[in-house]
Length: 333
Image (spheres, rainbow, N blue to C red):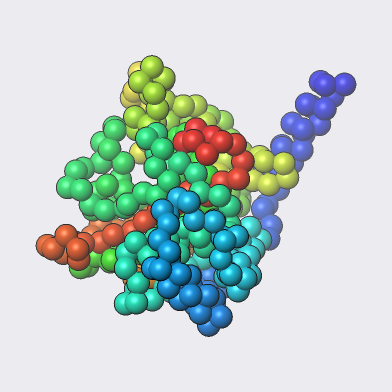
């Protein structure tokens, strides 16, 4: 019986790979309007946030102890339910517009962000050291085997977050400060890329369902392997899901001491080129006070290189959060 069930599952997965992905998540740029993903915070939600901040000024509490059930946030919860539906059932990304940065301190903005994000799923660790909130800032370093791109001002090409370990289904970015110039964002549907590959290069799509060696960027115990072995596309129940960041795979094969097969490289590069086509991605510039959320299993994102301010308080500063209900809250889940 077990063998029969496994065979049926294999057949179902093969059918999903062979079929076009349908639904709003497999979008083309011309089929998406700004109102589909730019969601203004309702007036009632902003009033609740004002009251929340005033309460926390009078009764301070560590951010990690904040619980949405301790505060009257019904309008916020209804709004974040709408955000979750866009992430799960629609285009897969949202920009929340926006928190009033002129009225709140950075710490207060983070507190609001923590509570709003927890209405999607619970915050979990996003680095091996267990950090739940992660400051995305230029630290003057360059991308390397153990240096992540979010610590640099360099261009970040198409990627999902932490596909080399146990990626969360949802990612958030709170914008506190923007760069002097550059740092523009783009998002692309990997489900659309899946469909285009199916039509143009089915043999390359098949390769992307097979595993690759990924560099783990040092985010693991010292005694663990420096690489993991994962595919780009996989099947989760009746849904296609993806993870992508091509340079980690090139480095993964280097660390493993194995030859990176030419078809695997071509499949990676072709998917990159498909997402880069204007018809297949949406560009935008995030503004202070906005929050970007993405479905990390369906949306790839990238960022252009940027120039920063001289004064520390004026430098580009985003705060990232990982959201996942499944597994433990540790980095590996």
